[in-house]
Picture 1 (cartoon, rainbow over the protein chains, first blue to last red):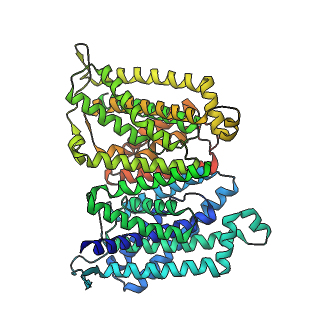
Picture 2: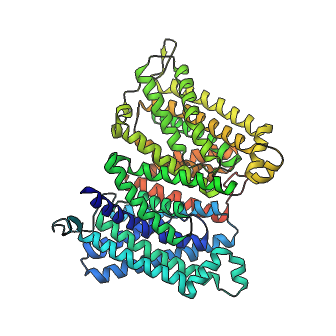
Length: 286
Length: 288
């Protein structure tokens, strides 16, 4: 029965969107603009893993940790040295968006110069893909890894969001930054930490993308836009709902490709995004 | 000299695009990230007309403009309700949708191959095979569009657009139907891109889906922002930057392998530093 397989594939596609949507949503909650530099963070994660694991052939776990940490540190530095000073100069959300586009152009350009513009996969092409089969459903090893890590990350992020002081502070800043400051929350510190966390998740998703489909300096863009689309459909900054919509989006996309054709998958997602944006504006107008 | 005319033709096409986008982004405050999609769609339409029908060139331009208006109407109607940053993201989505459509409707657009062998325009008995005569055509189109955009931005209509940019809710409470104004300027921009697209398709004699890349849209918007929002001279200057910068890089002697990337990095650096030190662009009056 292909329906179950398609649903499973959809969930697995959705898992990647889910990671991106969560990291993007975390970042949005504190800085409150569309940080499109996320595209380049994902590229950084994937390409550092490529460098450590495939080119320098370090063991798997250390290279995973180093590349995630590196992405997180870069995200933190971007926040500290570019976004926060820009905000202090009174930049509007639109100016921040444009600046993040600029950062994205710089980083992806640098990556293309260092690693070439070619399509590269972190997975070793010589080794056969390991496929597990149960109940007639097949899943590759990397997809299983993807599923498990996504589950862990979601549990981690949601528990931080709900039960820790950091999560409460993030919600407070998300509500109103000035008031949060008045109540003694060190907003700069919290925003920096959130950038670190969201950078780490973005790096992880970049690594999974690199194993699963492969990396290309211009390639990450589409997947990230889809993650952002999932976030918008679910409601910006609403992490559980945007995680759920990413999964639904993945399933819809896979069924859409099954019914129509694989070439329409991007179109379906962005059509959905615009329809949702329109419907939400209708609701707001009322 | 041939090289120079080539650059000048491209430059005038980009100036047309930037002037159109300036009306939308600079005067009305709608950050449109789908300019390249409309431009590419216009190019495709005119390429189809030019290769299939042997009509007068001006009739083809008019036909392309009318169809682009018809296409942009429903899009503008939907986008009208979406505000601020969401508008930028929604137009990005529109750009991707249009790219996918052009890529996948292979029976009309030839898919990734694109349409080749678009004839040069014929006016009367005179075919503009020569680049000099084509440049003349481009400059005429540019001057007409420059004057039109100048008239629009200085008219009472343009003042309402600026009002909408500064404060849409107040403009509404003054009784202006802001939705209609925004829709009108959106459609007008689409017709300007149709002209630019027709010129490009018949100049390059081919059109590929790469013209509809989102990066191209970002490039055009950044040109308008760098040059200065809500200023015609600024838009022209921005177009000059994006057209001449790759040529300057080539002139310096950068290896061609990293030329595109170097250009991309330079644009990125310019965008970030402008947001820091001069958010209104070089000649701009309106701070982003």
